[in-house]
Image (cartoon, rainbow, N blue to C red; front, side, top):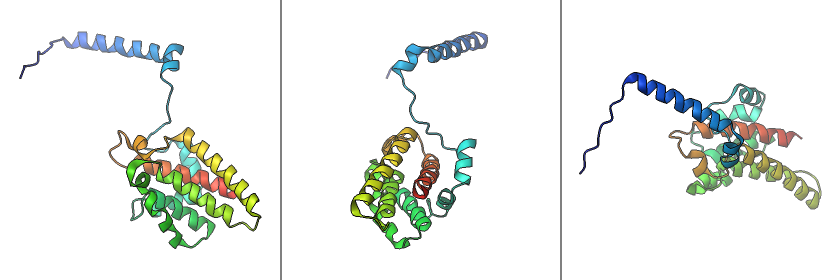
Length: 187
């Protein structure tokens, strides 16, 4: 095994170099060239921003999420459970979502996304409307929810969880998804 060489740099030289590196990186990221080659992806913070906190605090479903998330329920189960309670549907329907937890146990489509689509299906199918009207409503609301999700987070669990050791990012997304879903179910 080969020994590594140690580079010695005076503290003052290091500070000057790192300052120049930070300034150069800031200029590069502000340039049009950089923004075209590296588009900004969804914000996968672990904590709610003040604006998001306002949305969550005004949502019955988002507040109810804390009663289920990581308390014996996974992502899809929690998402569907808060929707079932909001729609006053039988809570034992939650087991329909059991196989969708953790991206269908394969870190595939996010459980909060699939739970939202399931809830929209239950909502559309429970209306006393003709089948074609229910399908139109289902299609419209599912497309709205999907578009919102795609602008908020990656579709797949593995991409959401990458680089996150705990599930805080999932909890944040679950609350936001619940609030968005509640808005769709009210409209």
